[in-house]
Length: 232
Image (cartoon, rainbow, N blue to C red):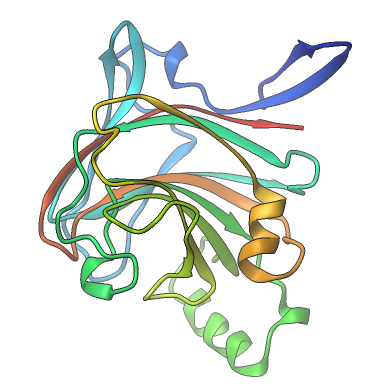
């Protein structure tokens, strides 16, 4: 874990660098702690690679009728590091994207935050479904998730459940092509966003990921991701 300290007025803020892409060479491999995040029955995967952009190294994602992500497994209490910040850029949104429909559930760019499953707060059928799912993987399956997305046309700050997973909430940060081609810095309070989305305090975070997908719309899209950091 890489920790650095920054001075804001008279107080120090502790920073956890989750994705230090700018410190790498554009010809390097993606760091091994960023693992592929793939999905059952989706054979075409988004291509992720380190590239140079105006003198900085960033991750470029290219998706052609494909879907997959990269995720870094972590475990921490989000109250210790409630602020998540990153930068991103897209070439364009997906024309057929629609946050409310399975057929349009694709996004040019997405930051994914996975939270631990809490059996004591889950019903019998949720626990049984999870037990079945665990039989097919050795990875920890999230109990809930926040998805910060760059949508096609949904209004900014819209919060809706994924059409595929009710415990995966979509939060629209950017929408449309007005700022396509421009690097945008984002900073979000994960704890407050989780409470807004789910109406309760968040459990532990177990992973943070990036994802660009176009499998439902069948289109092609390109996005870029800069460094990802957590702050106290």
